[in-house]
Image (tube, rainbow, N blue to C red; front, top):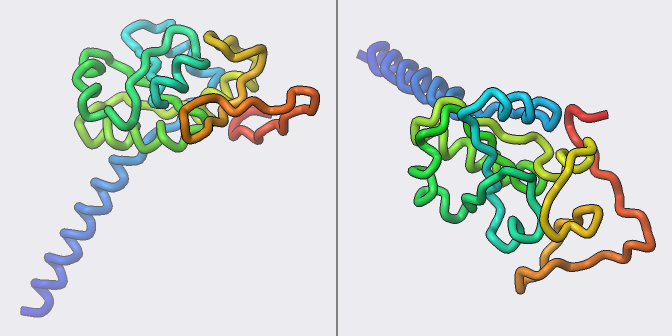
Amino acid sequence: MKLKSMTGCAVFFAALSAAAAQAECTDIYAFEVQGVLAGGNAVLVDVREPYEYKDCRIPGSVNAPLSELPKEAGRLEGKKTVILYCRTGGRSSRACKELENRGFEHVYNLSGGITAWYNTGRDLEGDCEGRPYFQYGKDGKVVKPDFSRPLPEPEVKGCK
């Protein structure tokens, strides 16, 4: 009798592991995104908050904040491929897993986010003032750095 219950536990944990493996979101790098978008029926989604999106964004993207993703998911359902981004990839990774759990099959997380996009020489639109600086105060307003000093270059996976 004990063997049967242990076998049942093993089957349960194997199924749980398989579900967790399916919820792993695939990273896509900045230099791959334009090719995917050119293929058609793909959408680039900024999951940052509206004030961040308004300030600076990747051209052609749409805003579907992570905080509103359950409500916004229906708007994305007709697209074959969904590429998500945020500032550096953390929020978009969570959004990617949430969409996969909702049944989306071709969902990608832009590795390094909008920072990687900018650091690989791609254009941004909005009030980026020449180079983006994505730090916001509690009031949602941009905290401007001292541009007389160079900003640190973030290390972005996949970009050298």
